[in-house]
Length: 90
Image (cartoon, rainbow, N blue to C red; front, top):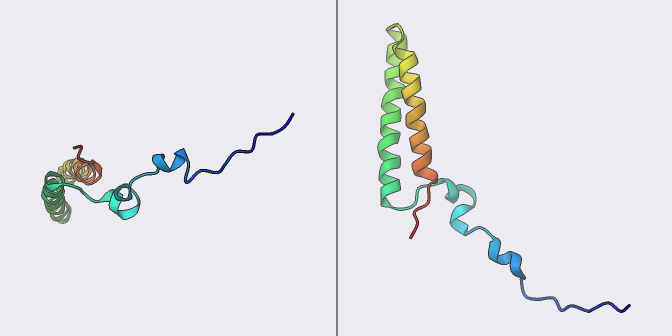
């Protein structure tokens, strides 16, 4: 049985499945769109304030306040990550 000789195409279908340049590397982890950028900046400032309050609460030994601050800080950093990685749909 003879084999078919197939021509090699230009790029093939796999090229269509490649990720866009804005989703690769560092650019994939930065916010896109004014809403995501403003939310990223806002919650980053809130997270920095929570870190400062955690240090102050720990230094003053305010009981269980540092534990509550760490929980809220974790939630705030999660929101920062979501604003940074969520892509705006057209």
